[in-house]
Image (cartoon, rainbow, N blue to C red; front, top):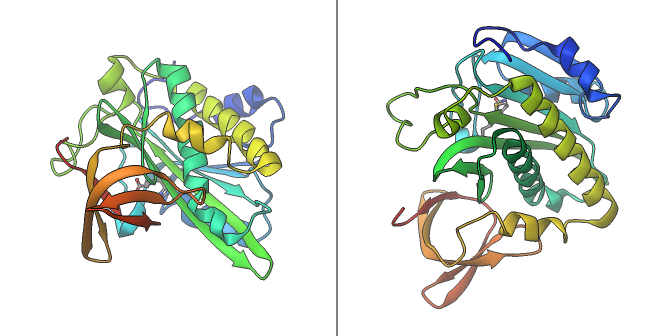
Length: 265
Ligand code: BTN
């Protein structure tokens, strides 16, 4: 078991990865601006697929839509993985769903808690956010050059800043016990690698039902803020491209991005 104030033991992690591709190269930092920034710089210098960047403390950790990602050091997981998928740029809408399913499965495996997916990039437990995914891609002429998959999981943190506290939670808050971060990280890398191999081989059609089986958004009323505009409607499903399909007062809308609030929750 990790003591709450110890650095992640990356040597132990490496041993447990048994030669897998995800985590084959690990860059571990006590403090960094953002693991996504570092992973992007490495990817631009030809770092190989599966390279993992992790940090205890991020001074400029970021979330989607320009938000800040705050996480106490020694208590959480904040890391990024470099992917080099042979996929068209449109896959950038689907990859967060893949990551959400993989991370949800790993969290459930290690904590026994049941994890819900909230479109597009959030994982919830008990209706509150436990993990977030930030995908940043770089294009080349023929398609995607690389993708950095940034993942933050609230693991053993038990108090949150006042402004996010009503919406944030952690595995420890939900399950009442410490979670071993190395075991959880190893399991996340394993599930990410397995689902990645499957989507590279067969595409996303087996993945979307897995995501749908983990969401409670279907048939719920939501509002989505997109570039300052608000669209409300009932969620009807996902398009094959990973967009959210809304019934907005009888008109079907297909949304590729936005900030979602589930109304009445
Ligand atoms: C979100 O919920 O908006 C996405 C949060 C993603 C946070 C992670 S922590 C590791 C990686 N580095 C960052 O700066 N952000 C991601």
